Image (cartoon, rainbow, N blue to C red; front, side, top):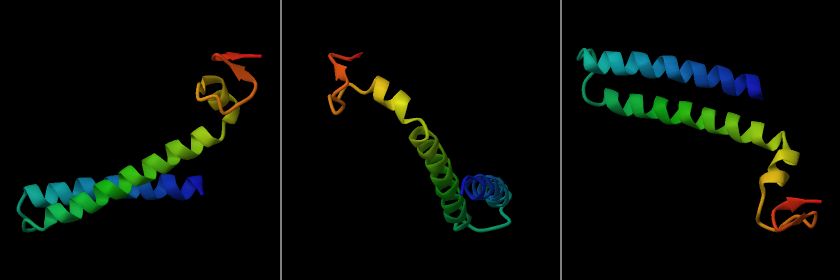
Length: 80
C-alpha cells in the first residue's frame, strides 16, 4: 500500500509540474489550471495518507505525548 502511495504521489508531482509548465507557456488554455489543481490535490492527498499511516505505526509514542486522559497509565501527563 505504501509503495502505491509513493508511486502515485511522485507521478502526480511530475504531472503537476508538466501541467503548470504547459499552462504558463500557453500550450493549454486557462482550463489547464484545473488540471494542475487536480494533480496538486492528488499529490497532497497521497502525502497526507503516507504521513497519517506512519503515525499509526507508532502507537507507543502517540500514547506518551497524549494529554487527553484517554489512557489510564497517564496521570497529569506523567507516564507510570
